[in-house]
Image (tube, rainbow, N blue to C red):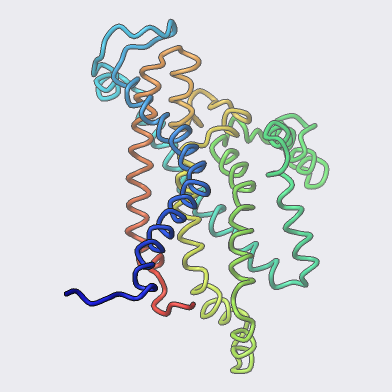
Length: 317
C-alpha cells in the first residue's frame, strides 16, 4: 500500500503547473512584442535579401530566374568593389579607434573629473548634434569646410592666421567624413562610459587618494579596469554601426569626389536604388552582412566577452 501524501504534497504539481503557466504568460507579454519586432524588422529583411541576391531583379522588379551571376560579377567584373572595401576599412578603424572609443572615453573622464554641473552641461552641449536632424548637422559641416572664404574654417585661416583658404571636401574628403562621423559618434560612448564611471564605488577613489595615488594612477588602476565591459561593448556595437553607416557620407561628400569616400554600404545602396540593380545591391548587402557577423564574432572572441557575461558566482536573494 503506497504511503499517504499530505495535502501540501498533493498540491505541489498543481502549483508547479500554475507557475509554469505564469512564466509562459509573462514571456508572451514581455518578450512577445520584442520577438515580433525582431522577426519583422531584422530576420525577415535578411531572408528577403538572401533570396533577392540569387535573382536577376532589376528596375522593373521582375524576377525571371535564380542565378549566381551577381556573385560572379563581384568576383570577376566589379572593379569598384575592392576600393569600396578598402575605404570602408579605413573609415571604420579610424573612426572607431580615434573617436567612438578613445575620444568618447576621454570625454567621459574629463566630464566626470570636473564639477558635476559643469560636466553635465558639457555633455548636454555635446549631445546637441545627435539630437538635431542629420541634414542640419551635414549642412553645418558643409558650411565649416566650404572652400570659399565664407566657410567658417577658411574665415579663421584667412582673417586670423593670414593663411590661404583650403578645400578639405575635395582634397581630404575621407578625413572630413571621419571627423563628421567621429564627433557625433563619440557622444554615445561618452554617455555609456560616464554612467559606468559613476557606478564605481566612491570609496575606491578615496582609498586610492589616501594611499597617495595620483589622477593618472587612479584612472589606470581603478577606472579603466572597471570600464572593460563598456569598452568592449562599445567597440563591437560601433564597429557594426559604422560598417552600415553612409548617411553623413551621402549628405556631406556624396561619396565623392569620384569614388574617394564611397564606403561599401553606400556603394550597395547606389547599385540598388540609383542604378536599379536590386538583385546586385542585395548581393552586395549580403556580403556586408557576412562581414558584420565575422567582425562581431572576431571581436567577441578577442575581447573575451563570454567571460565578461558570465553569471555572478554569488547569488543574492
